Image 1 (cartoon, rainbow over the protein chains, first blue to last red):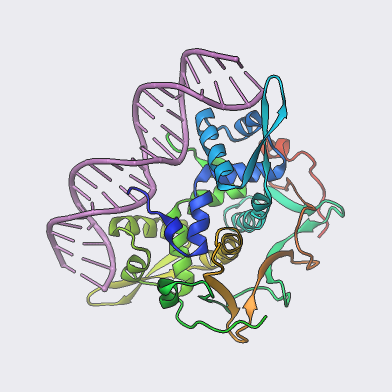
Image 2: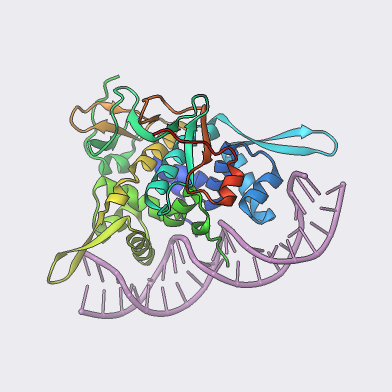
Length: 163
Length: 163
DNA sequence: CAGTATCCTGTCCGATACTG
DNA sequence: CAGTATCGGACAGGATACTG
């Protein structure tokens, strides 16, 4: 066993990394969100070797984040579309981009998010969907209903959840 | 050059991956957020080989996400604390965990987030800090003030930003 | 254009042994 | 306890050539 099988872990973070843990995968998703769908678009955008692109694309399709679709019969041509699961990954990229912009961009922001209808700049933050309150220090992680013994042991105080 | 130097890219996502792109780094951060600070705590929690833990810890310290602090003189003992930059990474983990919980946990949630004062379950979503509106399809990425030619070329419509 | 097929290398990572 | 040192394997990733 060379690479730890994170997928065995019950932790959702570890499982996520199992699917998108490689560098290129996330960059490919980033480009997919920008609207790229075709092999050569990804290749020229990323400067990635074609065999690597094939591998990552296949992995992403296999993981259920992208879908390979024939868009032309002869010659056969495929495009890679985000699935619902893939589109759900956007919040991760938003927060990752926000973090990088804040801490790793001494020259200022190289990209910004805008609302496509109003054109206003957007500053993404994470809040609780119910209360609307920003998540900050007061957040704790506890074992959930499907936690196994290991997880329960780690996140000791299992609490009842009010709906 | 074996590994592409993502750090050269102006894209904040690529730059972020440059710092935390390895699997273990993110898992170490996850544990740090849970409160772990010491070498052996990380090791037993993660089941990671000690040399790898040393490398990842050093990388995270070098990247500015963790701080190594002497907490005992004789024998010298160190602990690893999150820096402000490291704490700012939490939203990424929240969204990553939310994505994994939703799409990769057929048996249900193994962990949940709760408000530590009220005990209520939290569902993290990403919204615009200004308007409070959830980010969804209507979000576009455009070149920012510090974009170079490559970025500007990619994210063509550079717009003025109202403060 | 949209890939596939080879070959090669760096390094991530695991296993183990050892030290103040 | 908190690491360092060394060894080796698997694979991510690069470079290049080739195909329908």
